Length: 181
Image 1: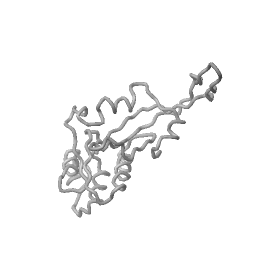
Image 2: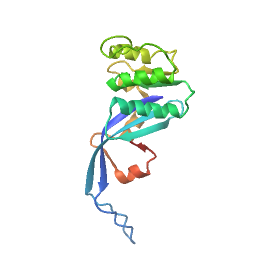
Image 3: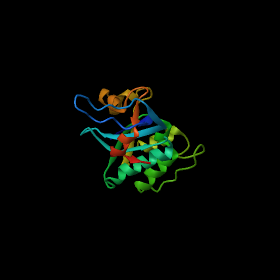
Image 4: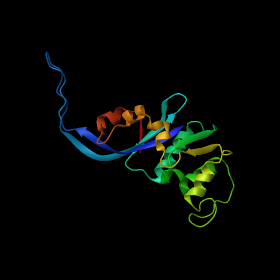
């Protein structure tokens, strides 16, 4: 699974309903829209099939939001071996993610304390724990400054995610099969 986020997506809604089709006229959509803040889209791309798996959308991107996203993905097949390819964002090697992996993999190891000792001491020690190939759920990190190696960063995914200043209309979100948190 390749995992990535798109932040800052504008949530917009048309201010007026579209004018219907009439003889000799196409449907006309009013240019004015109402803004409803921004959203963060987090998705998993199943590399073998190209399918998007367990997408989530929410108002922010915190370490707990990311852990919840991974938990929903893993819940889709709780006994499978999971490998997630992702960049080096700090939420991808958080204390909460280490505790989640240790719990779900049934690992009874002392994790230590964040910033002090053990696996939780630094981001590097947490990333090393999360990358351990013996774990049923593990994470493979792209090298620093090489997030373009993540399959989500291909031109097709960039087109789906939208460019700068892009937004998504709220009525489209209601039809889109996402779990809105």
